[in-house]
Amino acid sequence: MTAVGVETAGVDLTAVRGPGGVRTRGRRRLPRALHPGAWWLWAAGLAIAASRTTNPLLLVLIVAVAGYVVSARRSQAPWARSFGFFLKLGLVVIAIRVLFQAIVAAPIGTTILVTLPSFTLPEIMAGVRLGGPITAESLIAALYDGMRLATILICIGAANSLASPARLLKAVPSALYEFGLSIVIAVTFAPQLVTDLDRIRSARRLRGRAIGGLRGTAGSALPVLEGALERSITLAAAMDSRGYGRQAHRSRMVRRTTGAALLGALVMVVIGTYALLDASAPAALGLPLLATGFILGGIGFALAGRRSIRTRYRPDPWTWPEWGVTPCALATAGIVVAASVQGVSGLIAPVDPIAWPTVPAVAVLAILISALPAVITPPVPDSARGSRT
Image (cartoon, rainbow, N blue to C red):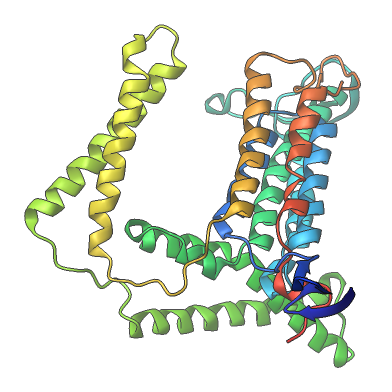
């Protein structure tokens, strides 16, 4: 029996020659890009978990899990390098939140660190101060709130680094195509900004000009703004030449039915959600209205999709890797939300008095589940080892 190794399309195959012929064993999964909806669902699970806690240890763990998955499964495309930008943006958000608490917001606690000059504000701004004492408890509370908001932004940046915006637009339903296109254009702002900034800084470095400090920032801001304006004009011309906004003819009855279904779905979902959250509401108003609203919404979206004239070329598949990522997101969000509803200690860090936060094991386990997509998903094509063109 002989074995011959063959490497093709990023897959290491071993051909075994025996009495029954030649058999092939695969040692590596075929590299392919995951469905963008799966990555956004995964990021939404982490973001929901981050929104339910102010424990800095859990928030740092969420950022670490997001960074680990991004480093393992992001491609080499320009838009995939925006994760670092969102990390820096998170630090800026934390600094602004702490500064706002120190100068404007009302103090918390009694441990005064420093007293700033205060100013008397009019009565219409009651509850708002300018200056005054700065307490350690208020700074710690602001730090925790800023970390929570920064973690949510970092989760969005992780999805932005893993999911291609163009492929995400292909997966949007026909009824939401215009809305989805607007969202995709807005989401791609950060990657394009990072790409333009890297290009301009490299050009300034080659010309021997400053790239850091106030002078370097001011010299790079104008070319970035000019590039954004040129890109917007080019995008508008491309959309106009491709007939963006063109709609199919629909009868008046179909238009009225579509509007009535969507409006009725919105009303029923709002009432059903309120009935589920309000303990005093009748039980018959909760799930039945919510289910009816979702059914009407599906009918309305199906009818609204007929007005969009568009085709799909090679739609992204949704196979077992995507179904493997989905339970990870649902488990992370569901376990942390359930723990928050049940009042598990450790999710909310104590600030008055200041104490070291405890780490609930159930929340740690729920967050670590979201690290599985780095293992269960196939590698991306341009980063698969041993791939050949």
